[in-house]
Image 1 (spheres, rainbow, N blue to C red):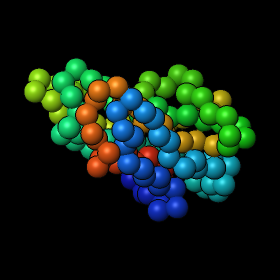
Image 2: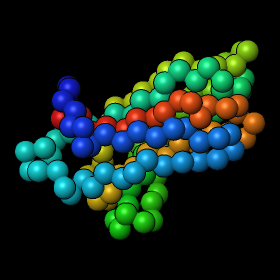
Image 3: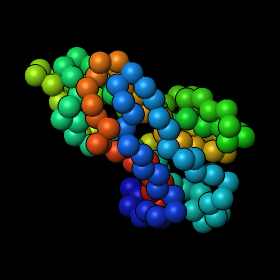
Length: 130
C-alpha cells in the first residue's frame, strides 16, 4: 500500500453548486519520474452536511491526451454519495490504480444533482499516492 504524497501532485477544488459540475486542474502523468511510475490515485470527498435527501454528489476521474478534451477513465467507477434520511452524506473516498490505457492528463470532475443543496463549502481532493 502506498502512503507518500507529493504536494505538487494534489488537486483540490470546491464542490459546484447544485445542478452544476466543476473540475480540478489536471495532473500531467507524463511529468512523473520513472521511479514514481507506480502509484495510486486517491479521491477524498468530505462529509456533506447539506446534501439533500436522495440527491447525489458524484466525482469522476477523467483523462485526456491533450489536456483539453476529457472523458471518464474507462473501467473506473465514479465515487458517489447520496443524501440520507433528513439530508447529509458521510465522507467517502476511493483509492485506485489507473488502467494502463489511461491518457496523459488526469483530473477529477464533481457533479451535484439539481436541487441537491448548497455544498460549495466542501472540497474534493485528488492526489497521487506513491
